[in-house]
Image 1 (spheres, rainbow, N blue to C red):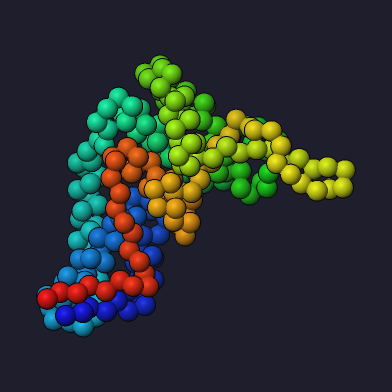
Image 2: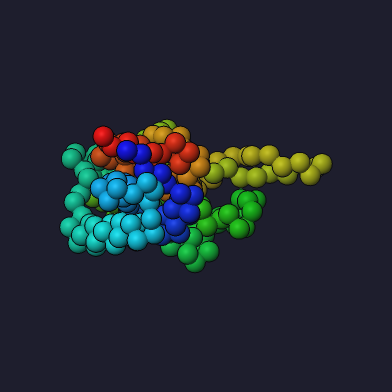
Length: 219
């Protein structure tokens, strides 16, 4: 049988996930649970009680993950990458919530409203003593993240005599770039950032649900 997903379900899923990056995969899990449940119940589409029960189930998963979260790293390099990721992600979320930016970011000619995206890589990893723990590996990890498109360098904005703006020299700041694994530009920058790092560390990739063509066939 085929179980249909009404349009309101996608909106409810997005509202439930919100800006909580930790729920990125859980929203997909909730949809799958709701689909299977509806199919087992003999329903032709996902109902409100069915989706609500699915949300409760993945919220339970969320609590379990928070308590028993395993490390993803299997090598020293992966361990370093994971440590750098969590340091950058925490700083990124902190700046986003408070609307703050690192020292000197307001001097590079960029729009002030976007400055919270600027990350001073050196300051962030120094604050976590990662150079002391991993040495030059921290710099190599930064280069890997830039080369793989997880982070992008921010350049100064220069204005010529005619008032035309152009990018100038590089600054010490980086920001989350596109998702290097899926190139899914529909994701919010912070979610692309999270998925790109996670996939790099674990070596895994979980395809995202296609809203337009997502039907579950059960025979």
